[in-house]
Image (cartoon, helix red, strand yellow):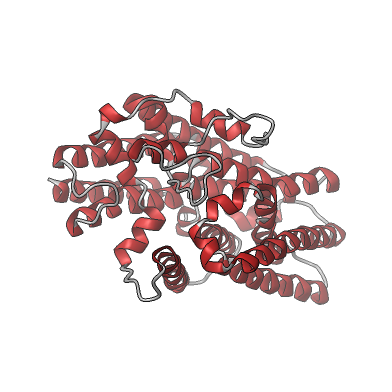
Length: 438
């Protein structure tokens, strides 16, 4: 049964891609939110559950009823089709037929002085991110890296704003990459300085997130830079384009595997603890099992009717000011699966990363999941239309970055964590936008 659903899902995947890509330039299609979304979605909700079923590897219980497991994949496939219908029938897709990012940049008027100001603003963002990253690293080394990896949640509880501001490291790298790609008619010295800062900020990100084992932040940087690069670069060969993407993700896949292995060895307090590829995939993108568990254990779970989304919005209020502030979906799901596993303020807390489908189901059930999928498709469509219609270079970067992470990272993230990170990283960009007025 699972194998049949998997094969049907592959046929649906290929069919929807064929339909969506018709009359759209290949480069525009591959860098579109639909392509990004579909690849992430299929990996998380089709390939991963299939691999877990075949290898009989699960985190929460030894096995699942085949009917519940199969229905979880069917519901995910229906959600996927609903997102496709919204985007396929939208005005956004019809506009993509005559759209390229390079022509969009050419239609925007800006001066070399503006590029220089944007570059110096990027340096300011980078320095602030570097400052807080250095403070966090100092604290990590003071308690020991292994101790930090064992209790990352408790470490972040008292240093939330410092951890969030350290994320300005990767947003500065993405900004430098964007400036370097789109800036035309500027002097070669400035161009070299921008490229140098791309390299410096990129290395800073790898060092910082390599030490604190934050694969998600490296993935945000990787996905954003790769798709921004190929969006604003004219390639003569589509084969070369695909080859470069595969090569880049393969290299970073090896890096993520090593980071996951190091974290597992720290948790097990065993430098020789085994760590397989399926474990790595499950730890990074194993959100679907959350959904399966909820379907199989209906009597143990409850609907939260938007409580976890309210928690995301109110997360910026310190818990010292509001002791009963609602928890996000991760801790709630963790306590549902293992009661008492997450207690606010307790050392060595463990949470879970929920993802779009799981969190929709936790709050509103299956019908809410399907309605939420339609709304999600509308969100991508509207962000895409904003990008096509913008006439500002700063706005183009902000909207394009938003479109990339909402069509990728958002799918497997907890809403609370995603919103906090997104607001903090987008904040300096909005300040730049309204300060430079471009």
